Image (cartoon, rainbow, N blue to C red; front, top):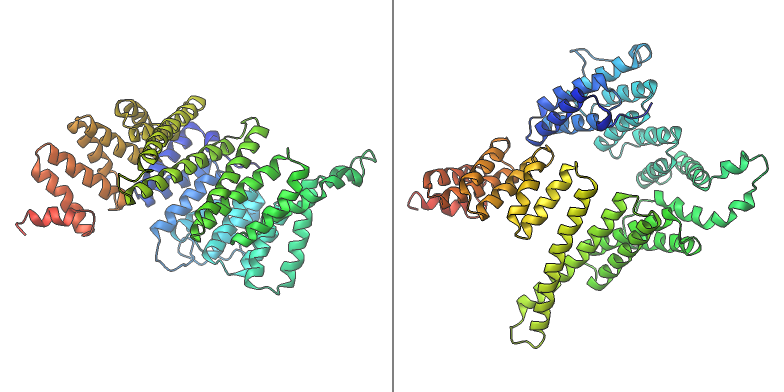
Length: 485
């Protein structure tokens, strides 16, 4: 049975889920669980809903010891016939328990068995993945998850889990054997050897021998990459196959991803800047090549390509800024570099806006993209143009608070302080916890009040932050000075 997507929910269920996402954003986790459970009664295969519920439950029950009870009584999965009688009811029962104890082994095992029985293998995977997250070194659960992946044909994930087991217990003979079996199955599937067996003699194994190097390289996708040396080895293996099949999308995409990882690892290890830049260049090239092979049909690849190009531009801008900050203006190369910095900054801002506009044009109903365009316009000082985009973005609960924060900044820049105050106050009122976002909004609200000459209202904002975080920016100085200290 296929997983239900948000778009496939009924209008009522989708409205409830949007409310749940908004409630989660403002920290109202109990309401999230209440709403999502209602949605899941209608759409038990809605995996994104279960993921949101689990995240809310983890946040709400943080620090509590894991227990397991259902309606106040201990529940035995093996002795219960609920899974066999009605797996959907069993899934509902498990979900109610997981709201109070998201990492419960018995409740997750109940969800796993019931989801499998009901025909939702992805939900079953999620149940075991939750247990692995809570018990990352429990090889018994890891074995169960790997076996499940193999059973549903997700052999590459199975290999990755078996490799994880072998990192914990290198001499686990069962993991060694099953890892090889799963790896072979994955290779067979990718190489389409089954087509040969089912072709009735019209194909033979020699038809696919040319793809042998590709199969070997692709098998390495399941390997856990952690070090520069491991990435280097995989790049070497896959590149050899790619040279023979340069129009292969899978190989090109994998090389792009590996070079991107290599870039990130080099940065994290404080490696040479020129090496990092080289890996970044290669990642951009392979993402561009992959995008060309796909004729722009995969938006995630196109986005990766443009994002990394912006990353490259940002790195050059930062290098110039750092260098110019350390030399005297009379340095013979200062002016040329200053000119280059000004040109690149304008180029970056223009490119970011153009890219954001194109994404909105391609997906005009995507409010996340509206937010990104509004943010780009605001950063470029185009406040009037940013306002309508950010106003539309407020309708998306995932970016609502951030959009209101930026809207307030736009109104401040345009001198519309009363409108700015309205945005900041609304955003602050919807954030329950005094987190970094709320502190930022309150601080900007205080500054807006200050510009309006409303000293008491301004000071009250700073005091709210002061009571929670003494060291936040200059709030301590502002608050203490108001007492004459």
